[in-house]
Length: 359
View 1 (tube, rainbow, N blue to C red):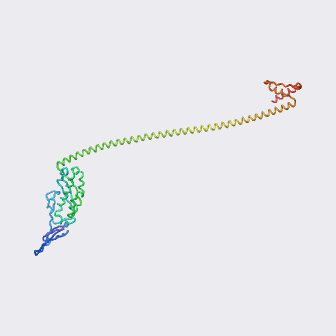
View 2 (cartoon, rainbow, N blue to C red):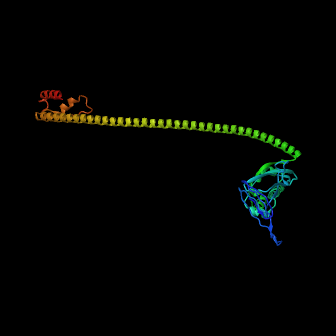
View 3 (cartoon, rainbow, N blue to C red):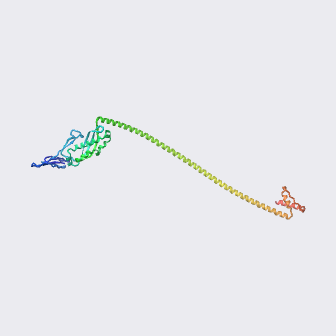
């Protein structure tokens, strides 16, 4: 882009473009006015006799200096580049709240959005970026001590930390796309002390890690022993339970066997008793039959004897003598004498012998 006006002369071309401004007025000696217009490249531009190109004079890196050093009016040009770009910036002698001086290293990424706003609001946007970024870093470090700063350096990579920088860039037509924290640097003595502290902290951390590893090893060993003891106890309990179950099963089997033996014995005794009863009943029936037979035989004998005695009486036999002859030694003797007993004595003896023979 080439901002230019009447009264000057210059030229530019190429991909980046160039710029300038100038003024023009009334040739008759009246009031003079200056107009600005922007020519965007790539283009070849030749100003007229009453135009000139604006020359920018911004802060920049000196030719014989470091890339992190910014010098006022070190960058002079007529063609304004509008592509995204970046710059290095070191904020020196930043003091923390414990009076530690450090140098914070940054890298800023920005892009031009509005040429008109930039031309109207600033003469040196680079200086504005440097001052705003330095103010943000100083504000950030002033509320922290050195130890806290070491732990919060990651915040310097966030755009939220650089509120003044982003606000100022928006005011002059720029956009800050990113800020990168490149590290920091302290004084030699402080750096040496810091290095020693780092070494000591590293040694202590390694010692702590070694002790923690030893403790973890001990814990693992104790945990392994505890698990082993637990498993051993569970195994013993399981073995005891199995032994108890086997013993209980054996006892139950023994009781069941005894019950079966007792049941078989009772059944055998019942069968034996039943057999004995049947045998006794059979014997009783046989005895009864024998007795009945004997009674029947005795009854027949008695009937036969009674019949014979009746026949003997009919023939005149003395039944008393017959009965006495059957009992030669009686307990008592009762003698009945009849008148005609002597006459039939011989006949009675024959009948008595026959009667004894029959009996």
